[in-house]
Figure 1 (cartoon, one colour):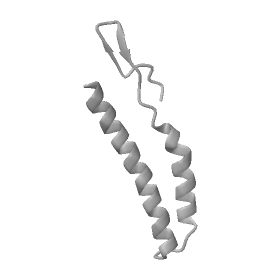
Figure 2 (tube, helix red, strand yellow; figure 1 turned 90 degrees about the vertical axis):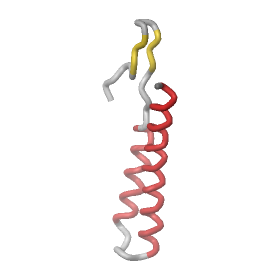
Figure 3 (cartoon, one colour; figure 1 turned 60 degrees about the vertical axis):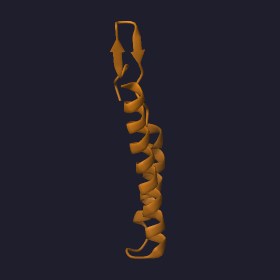
Length: 70
């Protein structure tokens, strides 16, 4: 997202950013499918759970990246 380096240490070591935007298309596709389902139905609940899993994966990846960098 416009950031070339996440961090620069001692003017030589540069750490690149974490690219979690790869999951963006998958999130969009899954949320569109969930929005087409009837509210309260089991099919909608299944779709929403899948979307939540993707967001959880992104959150875990960002947390792991920050812990490994620092």
